[in-house]
Image (cartoon, rainbow, N blue to C red):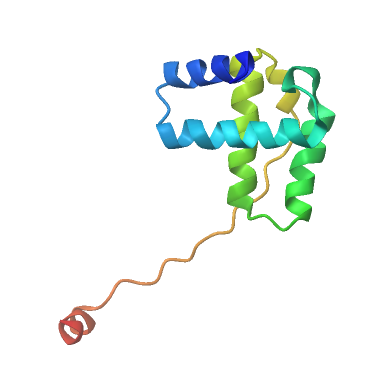
Amino acid sequence: MTPLRQRMDADMRLRNLSTNTREQYILCVSQFARRYRRTPEQLGASEVREFLLLLVDEGRASSTVHVYRAALNFLFTYTLGRPEVLEGIPLPRRKRVRVGRPLTIEEARLLL
């Protein structure tokens, strides 16, 4: 495990993030770094923007893009102390999930 990854994991543990969240964020950041074949310390806003656009262009769900952005936001804001990197990079709109109407009393009786 690289020193940056160890530092990020320690920061996430300090924030009391769940194990699943920590693992997912580490995976997202490692894919980001692998894409550019450089450590995230050497990357900036233009690479983050390009990477998130690539995810959108690949047809990834907006919720997936949100997770990647959250992981990169955590990395740059807390671990690297460079919150300005993600300033001005918009989030994709989330699709609204329509919730059906509640059952009427008669429909509930019929169901039971």
